Length: 196
Image 1 (spheres, rainbow, N blue to C red):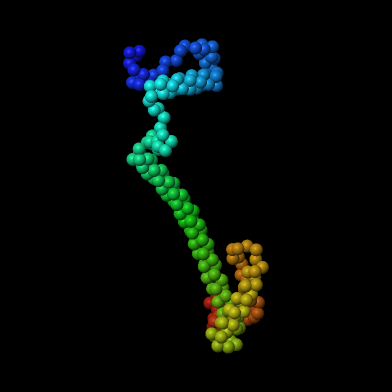
Image 2: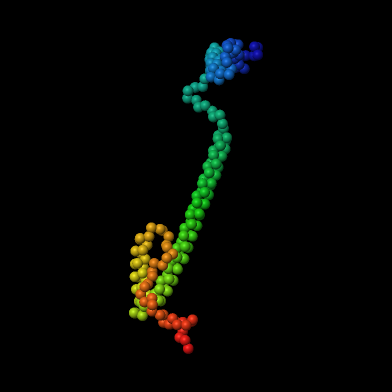
């Protein structure tokens, strides 16, 4: 090594010093010893290069080369983009699942409301048949009149309700002429007809 010129090796061998006095278990002291020795030897190497008239420092306006090539950085960028796309896909899948669940719940609620509305309408039609509104005017007029009156009543009842769901109880009970026998059966006999 001694016969090889310094410029070929750039190796500086430090003298044996106080390393035996340093407690190797103490991380801070050990690291500071390495740092101070390295700094001292680097400065020594710079002095040797200056004596040999060799420029060891880059000019201030020179850009340093990247440690990693552009091709390598493109690969890293592509990997990061792929990871981002995967995360977005997972988030989108979660969101769709939640939306699907919510939509299904809404559809079930709509079906319930439709069934309840149908039952309510059938009940109202039955009540209208039993009432004497159909005798007072033409069927169409009395039907419209009856339902317009009852829709106002039902709107008032809906405003009073606290619950969002439509109750299953009948809100449209008609007490007029309940004792009056219907025209179809007359209320006599098993089948509602007159006894012979």
